[in-house]
Amino acid sequence: MKNVERNIKVLAVILVLSLIIACQSLYLYLQYKDFRDLTEKHALLQEDFTALQKSHWMLEVEHETLQLEHKTLISEHDSLKSEHSTLQSEYNKLSTDYKALESDYNSLEIKYKSLDSKYQKLFSDYQLLNEAFNKPLKYKKTPTVTELQIWLMSDTTNSVRYSDPNFICGDFAVMLAMHAKTKNWDMTVVVVYGYDADTDEDFAHAFNAIRTTEGLVYIEPQTDEVWYYEDYREIYATSRIKWGFPNDQWIIIEDYIIVLQY
Image 1 (cartoon, rainbow, N blue to C red):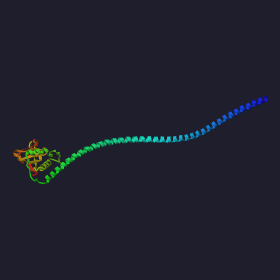
Image 2 (cartoon, rainbow, N blue to C red; image 1 turned 180 degrees about the vertical axis):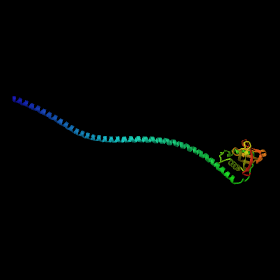
Image 3 (spheres, helix red, strand yellow; image 1 turned 120 degrees about the vertical axis):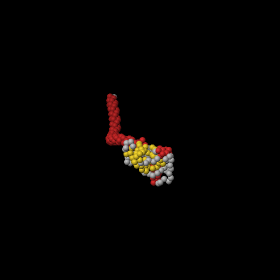
Image 4 (cartoon, one colour; image 1 turned 60 degrees about the horizontal axis):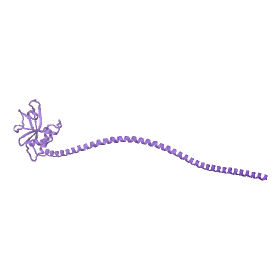
């Protein structure tokens, strides 16, 4: 009986030990499995880490490259800003110059049109004067003093500027005579020599004469003043007569020359 009880106790101990050993074996197996899983995960993570390190290195290289490109772009941007500022300044100057040139062009165009109009008129006048200068009158007209004075108001001879020796009294007289010829008026040029009756200063002057329906009258081509003497008589050289001239001058005539016959 005692042996049976002892055997039962031994079997119980063996069973407990077996259970303990089984539990320990299961625990160790589970720990080993966990370790193996962790080792596999670690290996995978190590691979990922290595790949991430490689990616990180590549990103750092790319970052450095982009930084260099960024610096280059900033430098180019600053250079372009400076160039833009210079070009803007040049553009503003050119724009100002263009506006000034445009204004000058418009002004010159207006002047050109005005000069062209004057040229056309002068060319027309030139043709008339050229014909009057080179050809004799086909027929003669005799104006009245009033007609003569009205025509002188529109004639431009007196607007020419006096310039010694380029354009003096004789030139004015010849010009007025040619202008009169275009109206078929037979106007002459006369020259007188003498001296001032009040100051004794020498006097020499060229002016115009024309026979009107009233008689012979004289014209100062520089002022368009018309005058005549008693009974419309002609000037002649004499020391006994003082001849009245424009500007209230009284002249003793020593010589009287008819340059163009009438």
